[in-house]
Image (cartoon, rainbow, N blue to C red; front, side, top):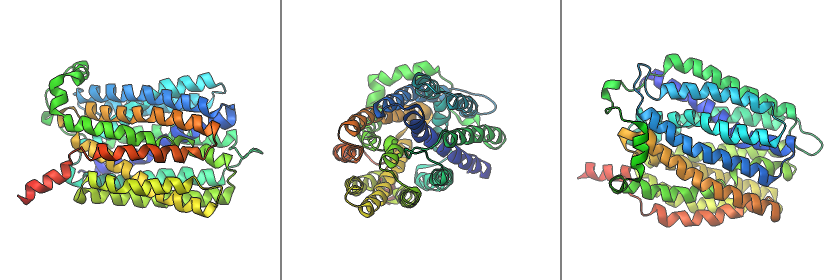
Amino acid sequence: MKRTNFISLAILAVVTSFYSLTENSWFNSWTSGVIGSSNFETMVMVSTSAGMGAAFFLIWGAISDNIRTKFGRRKPVLLTGLVLSAIFIFMFAGSKEFIACLILDGIVLGITGNMMWSSWHSLIADLSKPKTRGKLVSNLFIFASIGGLLLTVIEIVAETDERGFFTEATHLFIFYLTAISMLVAAFILFFTLKEVPMIKLPPKRRWYIDLKNIFDAEELKSHKEFYKFLLAAIVLTCAKYAYVPLLIVFRQEKGFDSFQRLISYIIMGVGTFIGTFLLARISDKYGRRNIIIYSIPGAILGLILSAMIDLSFEVFLIGYSILFFFFEGITKTQETWAQDLADEEARGKFLGLANISQTLGRIPGLLLAGIFADIIGINAIFIVSAIIVVFSIPLFLRVKDVVLNEQKKINK
């Protein structure tokens, strides 16, 4: 891979981590803490964003598959998405009504944000090979961690009000930082990102025909392993999004002080970093499926211990570290597996379908967690996740592993 392309992907890793944490956590905190929305209303906003995002991740992926310009096919979509999304984040920062937040986050950013996301995932696959893809993903995660660490430090030292919620000024700082970083990234990537030469790409097709062919029986048959993978991914994503979006609310409802926020973030960060770096990397050798299957029991243990925070904060920290080590490692390995299985000629479309599977999983997970959090208590988000994740195991066992299949061919 060209050095400038790795630099481009590394910059994107930082910026997408900013955007992801802001959109998935700080937007939720804004509606809950500043506007005063209920947990269920917040989950409605997140679910709407997920639904719009799934549709437009697929659409933008199919469009970028079939763009042929001197700048590339992903790059025009990527840069446009970065600039437009930054503008709409500035607008969200001025919204004090739930409906306005719902429209901006749930609909508008669901469209423009996925111009960035669809291009980002396709570029990783376009510019790498299966035998080293896990290593690339783990290396890029180092840079994503830098962005996550910065926002974590801000949360640890941020000012809170008498309720324990973050102030409006803290939220605005996060929003402005994210939007400005996206604009700067767009400017840099315009000069540094170099895609695969157009002469090496398949003939241009009509993107809407590509979408129509999704439902063609022959295409379903020829890519059956990918579609089996999608079914398993739906269940695993459902489990993850039963707890992730409400973690920032969880910390505030439990009244975490500055030290508790600090130690929990250190534990979460270390677990996430080691798990993602290690599991995605070794999946190049031992296979994506094996890594995921053997990691799920560890994730369940971490979820159960995390739910026991009222018994002991120390037990919670142990569970939290185990949870993020395994679940985040599973997530990156799953993303890499999707890139392995995606058709090279229509990668944007197939990764769009993978994103839809994540969205289909998010919505029931989000709604179930929001309902049980309001009825039973915020701890329920971990228990709901633990129950759901069990059902993904038999589904993943039915999917072939590209990495293991290639190793078998080499050994023969």
